[in-house]
Amino acid sequence: MSRGLTFTGVARCGGIEDLLYASDAQPSGTVRGKPAVISSELGGNGVLAWEPTPGVVAYVGYSGAPLDRGAVAALHRLAERTRLLSAQEWQATGPSTVDQVNDFG
Image (cartoon, rainbow, N blue to C red; front, side, top):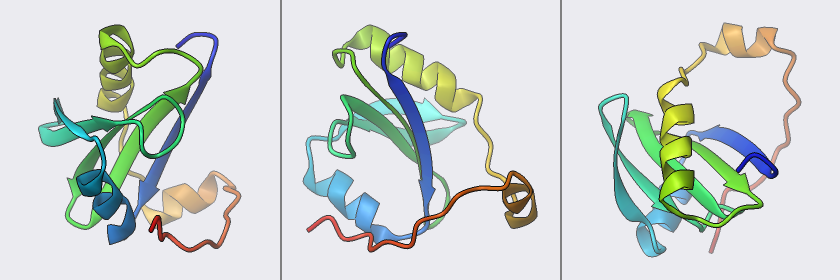
């Protein structure tokens, strides 16, 4: 994973969950005590996704290396270090946003 792109995201909608349920997602332990799945459906080579709070899907992923046990372990290490930001904390980061439809169908 060291030569690829690592990405993360948070979504408050059902589209990502629907995509994961309809995809090749496989159980992959837990992240901060919440069940997680690993998939290649959200772009890149692999994505680790979990629901940190009801209705919110968080994910970390990468592109540029095979999806193997080492990559899954690295995604878990990254995911365990994450935390949700409040709306105020997130706005303070000066984020760029894109309005888009979350419909993977």
